Image (spheres, rainbow, N blue to C red):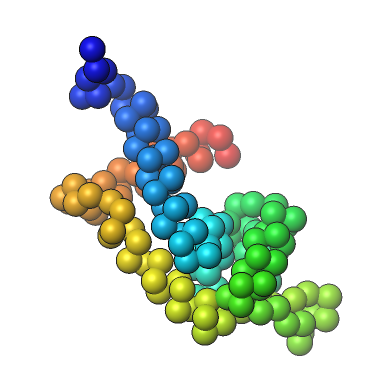
Length: 139
């Protein structure tokens, strides 16, 4: 007898939907040679060059994790690193034309992956509330 998902607790529904969306998202990004972490970095760099440390703070990951993500993006030609003219110890990471192009393509993946559930802004607002409530409890 199949499980009636309409009776599942909200946490289970959210977890299952999240897992399914994440799997589809990763598959779609991989087709463009990207990872979820890479898209996050390209998003932040679309606003202008940043240091690795700034990117790590924004993405809420460690510097070492960010370094590996930047390495992959650099090998793929999506970002470049240059010495910061104001501080020779620091490197500035910039998005390349190829990185900007692939980032634009990823912007359509969301529309392709997610069903139209109507009232997207309400769903977005509720998801933000869930995330912020959790961050406030943990942080």
